[in-house]
Length: 189
Picture 1 (cartoon, rainbow, N blue to C red):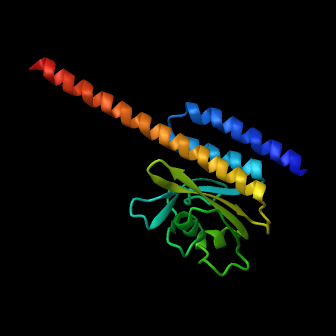
Picture 2 (picture 1 turned 30 degrees about the vertical axis):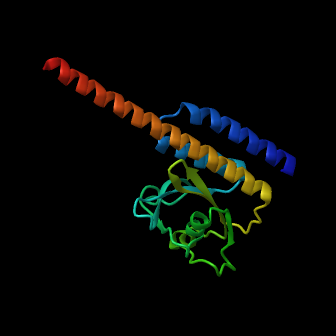
Picture 3 (picture 1 turned 90 degrees about the vertical axis):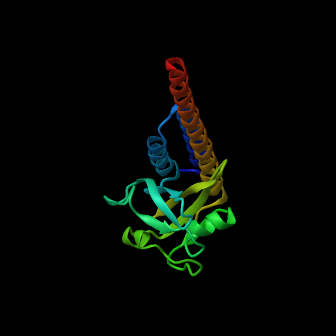
């Protein structure tokens, strides 16, 4: 596939997902769909969304495509600077790693078990701080270029906006329910 075809595919993927992100109210389904679309657009079979857990010390594999059973929703990776994902969070910069020569970070067992050789991590920035990381993992050595990084960061930004929108919508709906209960209690008195 030529670079121009690859870029067209990535732009089309962003546009397609953008429309869905505006309509969806289920974050889990939205993130799972995002991993499938990113996998296809960037032609890498392993993609995951890592959610920064409240302890700030770990990232949960919240959504993903082509991982072994039991990984998505259960596996965690350290969020400290000793992991590529943690370093991306700490620096708020994309991190590209060739795992066969990587000396900056500890390689999570999850990646070793899946035969990952090259990775890219980009931060999913939210209104209230980082939500987590979008990570693309290749089982072949891959040189990710600036176009790949730009696509992934734009996708992560779109995910962050969708997550923020759904969270605000859920908060608003909860507030409306609470007001209805209070109003009902006042009318009974």
